[in-house]
Every structure is written in C-alpha cells, then in structure tokens.
Image 1 (cartoon, one colour):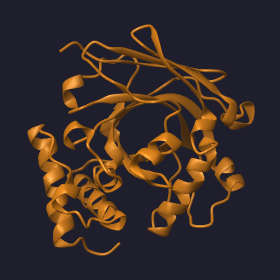
Image 2 (spheres, helix red, strand yellow):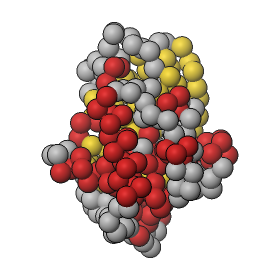
Image 3 (cartoon, one colour):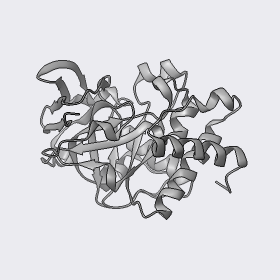
Length: 264
C-alpha cells in the first residue's frame, strides 16, 4: 500500500487517541461512510507503523471473522487480519489487568507457531502445514476502541481487527498428532461452561485460516516469519470480561489454557 491518505491519517489518529485517553470513539464509518476495506487496512497499517517506530515489536498476526455467524452479522464473505505485538502476551499465572482494555472479551483459539517463513501469494495447504512448528491452546483477549462494539467490517479492520492480548498454553502439539478440524473445545468462565466448539468452526479448519492469512499478507508484501504466533480465529462465541474473572479453554488432545483477570 502507498502513503496513507489524509482520511486514513486522521482516522488512525482517532484510534490512537482512544488508546491514549482510554475512551472509546464513535464508529469511523459514521464520519467516513465511504470507508473501504482497503482504506481500513491503510488505517491499521498506519497505526502499526507508528507503534513500531515507538519501539513495539510485531510477534505474530491474528485472523478474525472466521465463523459463519460473524461473517453473516457483518455481511462479509471473508475474514480479516490484525497484528500481534510483544506486549499483548500474558502468562497463564499472571493476573491480566482488565482496566488495560476498554471493552474486553475472551475467545478460545488453536494457535500456530511457525518454524519457517510463509510468503504468499500462492501458499498451499501443504506448504502451510510444513511451516508449522506446533500448535498450542490459546485464549485471545479481543477489544474494541469503538464504543459499544458497534462495528462494521471497516471499523474492526481499522482497529487492528479488534486485537487486545492473548494467553498461550504450555503444551505444544505437532500437527501430525491431531486433526484440527475435529478438536473439540469446552470454554469455561469461572468454572461454568459458557461455550463448546471445534476447530472446524474456523473456516472448516484453522489451516484454511493460516493459508488465507499467508496469501492475503503476501499480496501486500508481508511474509509470515519463523517464530510468529498466528491466532486463526475463535472456535466458540466470545465472552465479556469482568474484573476477577477466570477463563479456561480445554481442547481435546491439546490440553488447556487459563486466563485470569485481576480484581479491579
């Protein structure tokens, strides 16, 4: 993508201000109704440029809008992507400060860790599989800088695909030991089951999500690098967060992962 337009720079500044002031903003599409998907990615990438200039490090990518229900809700037919930064990572034993976020929600995912680069376009399923080092159970903390989560596709793309943070489990599993489509998940909030799902909820297979990401980023000149963490999409509906909440996702054959939020 070329230099950001004035509208893209203005919109990026609005989102950056939401982070700085800890105050959600109205949907960008309310003031910029003609905002396209390409515009929205330009806004996201302008923020990424400023963050990396400030010393933050990209450690991976996420894919959103992978479920049929979410695609129908936003009237889209393909996913979106965002960037993951080093300061998004929380350890399982580490209480996550809920007040770091604006409107946090949690969703369970099967994370990929890459052992070799993936450079699209043209990446195939077999190439994607060969590039994966292992998978891990994960919980993503999604967040929105748009008030009340009143987002369109362009709004969430511009807002770094509603990224916030993530927790990884500690039990790596090689791909050949599991069929990701069939991996079942039970999602608990404070010891109560709030959702169940399977890997097949993510575009039929999380591998499909990884291929889409590699090819979509490749068309923009970006390579998925060795060591990157890829969050391919949620296997259940997301859950809102309150201070003091504990979430656990248990994946058949992959183990479990827990995210604990600090009391306010």
